[in-house]
Image (cartoon, rainbow, N blue to C red; front, side):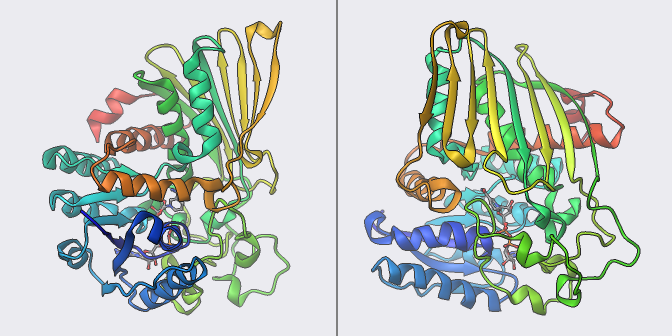
Amino acid sequence: MSTLRVGIIGTGSRGITCIGRQIAEQSRELDIVITAFCNRTESRMQIALDDVNEAAAKAGNEPFSPRFYTKAQGLIDDPGVDLIVITSPTAAHAEATIPALLSGKKVYLDKPIAHTMEDSIAIRKAEEEAGNPMIMGFTRRYETPWLKLHEIVESGVIGDLKMMLIRAVLPYSFYFQTWHRTRAVSGGALNDKGSHYTDVFNWFAGDARANRVNAFGGRHVFEEEKDAPEFCSVCDRDCPYRAEVAMPDTQDQMKGAVDRSYETETDPLKRKDNCVYKSGADIFDHASIHYQYNNGIVASIFYAVYGPQAEDEETLELVGTKGRIILTRLRGEIDIVTDYGTRSHEVIHCKSDDFESSHFGADKRLVREIAAFARGGDSPVDGKYGLEATRMILAALKSIDEGGETVQMIDFFETV
Ligand SMILES: NC(=O)c1ccc[n+]([C@@H]2O[C@H](COP(=O)([O-])OP(=O)(O)OC[C@H]3O[C@@H](n4cnc5c(N)ncnc54)[C@H](O)[C@@H]3O)[C@@H](O)[C@H]2O)c1
């Protein structure tokens, strides 16, 4: 394969602002071009094209002229597409991913794998049946500090890994404003964000597998109000969660949300400014989740989406038999204590040169990895990991729904 030809299904925030722009910026260097777009809303493809071509022009690269499709199958069958990138809303992953995998073409699927166990299992089965491993977009696996941390833990300096904690107190009220607000489309905000975390746990836990979970959670802040307006655009309240305020120009999310065409939509699930207080959302705004692995490791997620913007909004703490490590994501910093605390305490600053680009440099690396994968390289993270990450989250949601009862994951797995 010479020039790598990419088709993007779901040309929204993730597909364009993160991945499409990075393809445009690295197009010449990686010999990669975008040849097809698919969006169920046709007008969004021209908006997406203007966006990626602006990025290409800034980088001094040639503009793209992709073919437009409103159905995934059209793009999958397009002989001018070698690599299919799937970044549609989570409930639409299976309808595109299964035929894409079975077509034998290379496939990138963003996390989470799907919104239900049924769809997650069906995608994984298609991947196995086709003998066509895909590559998934678990961003932290492509961020320099997290990769460095993984190396450190593998080196054994903190001894045997025993405990893991991800603290995520995030300013992510947008989950109540977009399609994420219903489990029927997202599998819950916890699936959207927490699947990154369960994947990190599994990455660090190696061959071990989580076998039970209990969790508590609910709604503290985004509770339903009887008189809540429909959308921010028809509301003049002085509210910290207005859509335009709640989608700050951060590196992690929604940066310069691709287009504002959602403002003309009438279907609430196509809008990005649903009032956080209106009825219809069935997701949680906080949770405390605890997993036990079959090798004794315990792992917890301490999570809220109504947190303030803060440099320590996401941290990972690992405790081993000889020491502990804390990674602070927004600072790109690893704080490490080894040798039982008797000798060394070190702070490692490991921001890469592209830390200021989207997802702290991960998307840039990800596009390089996707290109290498499409040219025959191995997948660093395939559907097996995607399935496991979502299985752990859906089991935690079940526990929350059941008032904190322990869920045995094997049972959970078999009963869906
Ligand atoms: N890896 C990460 O860090 C990361 C970050 C953000 C989003 N994501 C994932 O990317 C996916 C998309 O999220 P987003 O924030 O870009 O959403 P988005 O709403 O901004 O974009 C989705 C786009 O898909 C289009 N679409 C909807 N249904 C479709 C269908 N059936 N076929 C084709 N196109 C369709 C929409 O019109 C929209 O343009 C989600 O699964 C999300 O979890 C991953």
